[in-house]
Image (cartoon, rainbow over all chains, first blue to last red; front, side, top):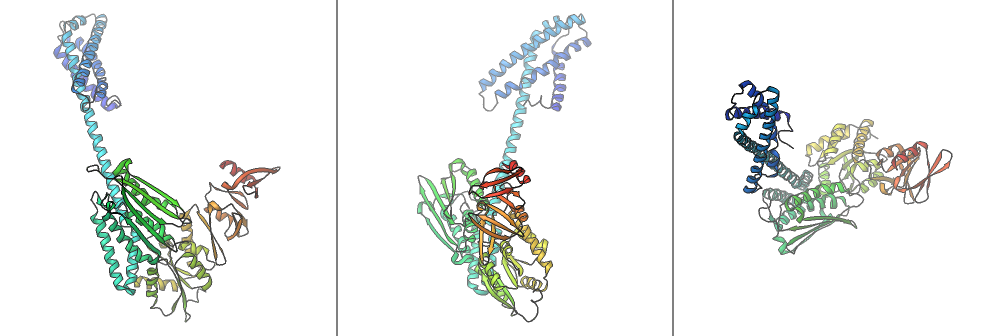
Length: 354
Length: 253
């Protein structure tokens, strides 16, 4: 959209400024000869107004030849052409206007105009250059503002992601239930209560320490996961079994911190805790073709499962993967035969790609 | 019954929680009350419904989040409800309902003092007023779960969970509904109107004063006599369709 034509406030301001400036220029540079000053102004003001409108058209060549992406020669040629066309057109209009004025006012405007042709052409070209400068300024200003908006949007998005990551990390439900277990153990098994509170502290400390790190080796993430699962095992007892197979090369593979954690929480919250008999959580990771393949499987009560609940944690992980890797990472889920399975494939995160 | 709690008789208690340690702390706290007897501990909703039916306790400590049936569903299935103290970790909606209705609840983890306070209150107050508060908590729980995903039916100590996808139709029978699912029929104490309210109205249609049908089961509707139609289901079952029921069907199909 045209930055001035589209907004009536801007258009008014532009016209007033432009007409005044152009009138001033015309009065200074053209010699009115024997035409009286008041009549001369009656000729000059419409001519200046005409130029104001013609100048508005300069926006279009500015838009198609943006300063940043066009070569200098292209910019120069475009606007040289623009200056010639506009000053010729405007001067031609001046002649027509002068002849018309001659007929109406019986004065010799046309003589004055023809005597000042060169000044008129020059002035037209100069005013064109001024208008081009103005439009480039407007475009740059708007670009800067857009970039600023985009930047603040990105910052907001990043903060939101961090917040939701934090929520995934310290699930109040998990904390309250664990603390309840600690309270219970204080009476029945004080040494286990001590162990449980230390595990909880370690879990919280490691998850806070991961904050702000771009990537961590999968082994570190899994250490946190094991702490979490150990705490949950105290709560659920025999109902929960964990089997993990993470090969050596997968262990050193860099992953975004807390990418596995929400999935383990899901496996407990929506899987094990909903089953009377409980079951086994299986975690597998291996590297193949330069990519990390991660698999988390848990049994689920298909009568109970609502995909919604499962979806929140997963949606979170999916979104983080999307932000960090674009289309290069994939997350798939499968529910079959009472088993819920999540497959993740991650490429190596390149430096500076955040 | 409600007056029977006081006096020298032992108050019978059932503890329901899927986590052993959560049951354990209740037992520890209850140990200081020789006037209370824990008659059963249950690890899931099915066990709880069965135990309450058989042992008829006076007081129930009931966890809200559990496998199979949650605490609210357990209460829904009980004929005779003992006094209830809900026990839950942070559960935003449930806790709000508890507070609004002033029913007894413990938030995990809870102190011995809080436990004593809630227990004393639960043993003292009671009667129909308390019952209606619990009813309202159950209503708000049902409201949150709408549309209904599964219908629970209890026949003696046997509990059936019928997924609404597997429900063919429901038929009114006085204060009961007869639920037809895969050739079997189940009787549940609920009015057809109440069932209609909680079912997904885009899939279940009240085609008649006495019938709700699952649209997925509907094969066709035929003119039976002048101004009277019947619905024929995929399995051949024929159900009457009232004029207003037919209008609803036409709107949806």
